[in-house]
Image (cartoon, rainbow, N blue to C red; front, side, top):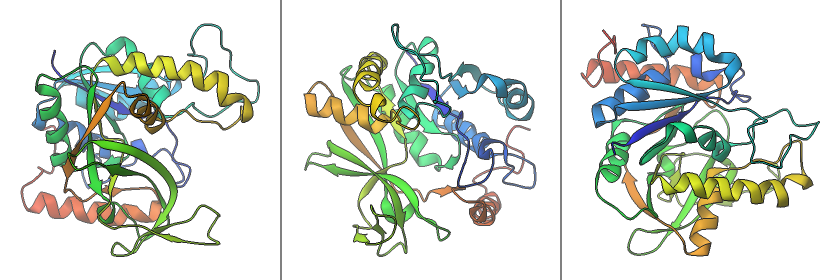
Length: 303
């Protein structure tokens, strides 16, 4: 089966201050997702699944989807609060989405083979898509997955803190753990994180591999997500029904700890560009302009 590209585009950008997925990032009015799909197609992906909110479908199709659909096999999946395993219900106080692992699970009807997962609001660079596609295109064990891991120093912003999944690996390049740190700051040569709202800061290795939700999963991982979603709803959600989230790294860690799955690190030397904050936008625009001048991208991606 040909690898599928799954793009998680259902979340609102709270730190950015708006819906990042639909914010133009160049003079042609294109958005980050345009570049991700373009790079994905260049790497070899043909089928793309966008996970969005149902209420955004019309705007998403009009502003992004229709132009992309002309160049790839585009499908939609809808992340909804009430899309839960049988026997579970949404707590009355719950308003926010269930998290990244739930977003992928929402696309389960569209996933019939190996699949890559990315965020809609991160500019990853073509090298990441090539690493994901090449890994998934090779024959492999159904329980051996991949992660296109970045160097931490290449994923920071000058405008505040970022959340990153910091990875530990063994000597063979297999992932041992991925730890979500939600407040990492630069500078690039001496990053640090805080777990107590800035009272103390702990140094991190700038060369440490980190996850930006650039995963390469075999189809079996969909069933694993469903299994752990039920566990999350039974065990973790009742303690914080309003805000508890079901994240992809949590599922990965559970599978690694159980010894049922393994994840290979796919080194990625691209520099991340994103819009975690609105102040990040000019730097991304300048980077894209420079890449257009070098011929990496045409000014009109879909012309």
